[in-house]
Amino acid sequence: MKTSVFKISALGLLLAGSFSFAQVIVEDQLEPVETPTMREYLAPEKYNRNVFEDPKGNEPEFNGVHVSVGGDFALQFQGLSHSTAGVTVDGAPIQMRDLGTDFNLPTANLDLNAYLAKGVKMHLRTYLSARHHNEAWVKGGYIQIDNLDFISPGFMGNVMDHLRVKVGMDDINFGDNHFRRTDNARAITNMFVGNNIMDAFTTEPFLEVYGHFNDMFVMGGISNGKLNQNVVLNPTSDNAPTLYAKVGYDKQINPDLRFRLTGSLLKSNGLTTGQYLYGADRAGSRYYYVLLDSEAALGTSNYTTGRFNPGFREMLAFQINPFVKYRGLEFFGTIENVTGNRLVNPTTRRDSDGNFMQLAGELIYRFGNAEQYYVGGKYNTVSGKDWDNADNRNINRFNLAAGWFMTPNVLAKLEYVNQNYNESAAWGNTPLYGGKFNGVMLEATIGF
Image (cartoon, rainbow, N blue to C red; front, side, top):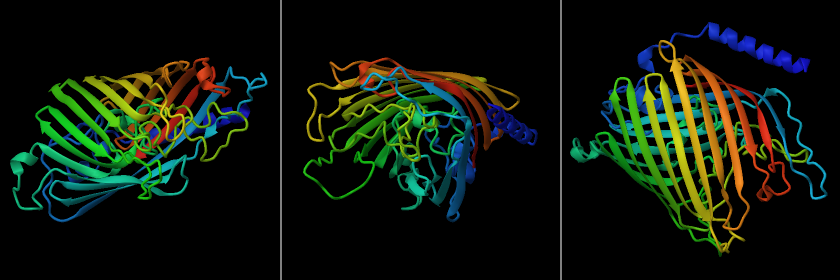
């Protein structure tokens, strides 16, 4: 106990000392700009809050290839406890892993962004260290085309004023949550520590075509539905594509009020492809080792603790996201539903499909002369069944958070989390049966 108190006190002194040297944030550094600088154009998420898709506007003039090197670093101090109502097959209480209060393994990203021609940019992200992969490996990347002057000056200029083409092997644009979630070490866009319970995020080869019309946009995309790429076929391979689309409205109504509403739809068509939407994050959850029994593997194993993956094939998913910001008060919501089949075996469908609904709402209040401070709350719930006559699963989470943007690139945040699972036979003889975890997380993150 004394050791834990000492660690918490030491961390508090460290953060307080860092805060005392914090730079004053200039207000216009935190607001989107109509004519971005080269750096802002190549990596806008590090400089502007509440950026979703890249704004469609005037691109910087091209006078040679420009390369921007960026990165992210994140470190958490975790103080969580957990418990379960679960019992073993012999009726004895499940013995849980002992959780202490200490630092998690730091995570880091490396970003390379290049301006290759007017309106043509490339992005590449490498995870230098992650919960699931301690070694460096490429997460993914893409090329984005907003202008065709590289073919001929002015070529299809009127069309490209409204059109965008994006192609790569990276996270596909399903829903708005993937813009606000923590992507390994990129935690500066997330005002909380954890991501959604049902975390819609997958990295696959894709082609996306956008149409921008004043304050509205539409997007259509196609992917091969695979997380790991391999040309070798086996008797069960179907290689069916995944199709998805998005439509949105985003308007700064007046200097005080912004409103955005988007809807996304995704259909995966294969039994051997397209099952990764809620299980493809190879970085890992922020809530380390919660609800594991005393025999569970640690290290890079069990890296999704605190999350839920429905495990469906042939999925149909939709996500609706409202976002409203009035002065310092902002709301971001998620209404998400997924239907699909949990196979009996790799080649056999079940007689009925399952369905899960996720609801989430974030309410943030930003204050200070440049809104560099914030407090907020979030409620997230998931409920549904694996198939028609299966037992119901229910998970709910409540978060309270506070944070300080010491500079536009440095964020310190404090979070209280409380997550609960229902006592359903669907969880089996595992710690998730009537499981719960709660406690405090501290996170410091840098993004540049």
